[in-house]
Length: 159
Length: 159
Image (cartoon, rainbow over all chains, first blue to last red):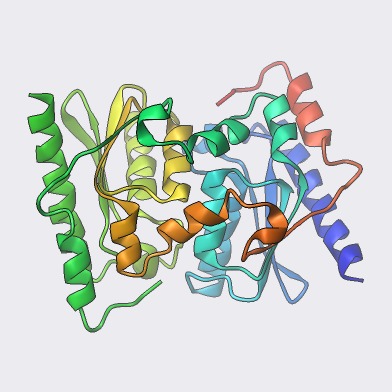
């Protein structure tokens, strides 16, 4: 029963991803946020149409679902994605804290059509000086001040 | 000279991060996008005020800078961050393709005040079945169809 539902929602993400290409909205990716077997929000890749490199399908879907639910956490939700999330989207999913993640294609399939997902997975675990991205950690005296003030704050909303 | 500029912009991110806390906007983080030594956009963490788990400082700054520049790439830009980007934000930075990333605090300092950055770095490299996040890869017959149609498209905008 659950796998039947999973396959139903995954097929829907695939159909949405195909439609997204032909609508000229962006890359071949789509995602759904589902709660209690109801779709809360859908998202597709809007990078090139919205001029937003962060507008991947999962990010778009998460933002819309949170707006819909009025909260910054996707408690009890499942995220369905037409393709394994890239590190940006997987990070976003961890921050949104849904119950499950289910995906169809994997990152090697995305890499085979020239998307950077697999490359970025390899990069982000490297030491700074070994990355293709010029990355510099500069020691600054006040670097910890925001954290100290955050800890000292009594009425903060944690996330 | 470059390091003096780097320290100037980093100090600015730290001041913005502190202000962000006291404005009640979200977590103790800020970022700047700089091009030719001019600030293109600034961003702070807006997760709890915008009900958006993806509204980290770097993501907010990248989205604003791309809107400002009218493009989905941050060519020639430097991203300054008050703290080492989490995997979501580092992924976003790779997709935005700036020239450099410079940051002040590191992920261990963020972890010391209970942010998940370091935990997520550890998680995303694990095999699916070893992650805390319930992750499922389901083989679907049509999984590759979006990629095939993307490849066949002649007038697509790549990113």
